[in-house]
Image 1 (cartoon, rainbow, N blue to C red):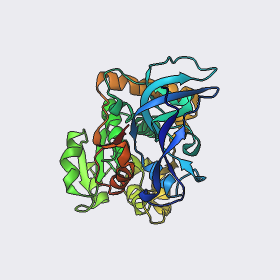
Image 2: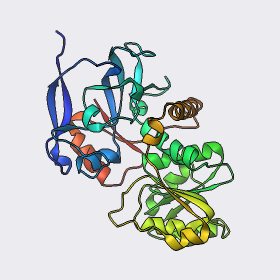
Image 3: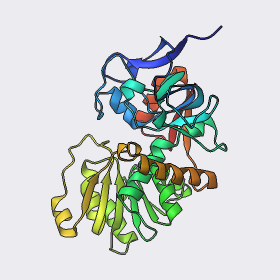
Image 4: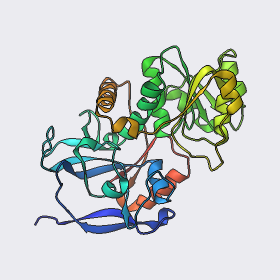
Length: 333
């Protein structure tokens, strides 16, 4: 007997992880330009927590779905879609509205432009831990930051999935990576993950440490999802003519523009979001090829921190909010 219902995650009010509910909904057919995926794994992102809390770029209209990343098997294809077949192993690229296309569920329907094949040597769990982190890092470092082999890169929130992806991409092109974290407990894992140096800000002054590591020159590029007081520190640690890429707002503190450092050093402080890459076909194609090649060669390899069962989706969100993870949090379906 054909299944006509699937479990999905929705929330009916803004709030904590407690508002996430698993509900049964009818399975619909994909529309024109869409693909339906039988989901095997879901990748969690900070954007989904912010969306659920009503603090994201997109405002949720409850009851609302959520989720950007899923991997699975293509099981239906809408009109006008080419390049995919029933049974293909694919994962989703964050380039759509969470409220309209949220992928937390047993079945996901998304635009075909937001679907990609991933290397056959990767599992479904690894396949769902790709595009948000690697595309975010690639866009910020390569397209916007113009990172080169002779640059020193500062990566804040370095143990996050995007932070680790940034480290891998930077090392792939030969740059020097300074990973910034709060506590010393992540120092060795970050070094093992490829960072050349680690600064634990609970125990060391960020600016003094960067200047010491660079013989007083400062860093060429900083890649930061925190903002708040961190921006001023990064400006002080930057080299003249340096660039700071701000791609998030994790800090609850106001983010004050570092005017005097920016004037004195001629700094560029640049806001950046992933959609700058994922909504531009030429840039997206270039980025996907870079990432696919890196995954196939082994230069890029997603780091999975912990896997949860679908029924424990709220616990997975709470775990992400603990900020103790090292890499990607995945939910299996």
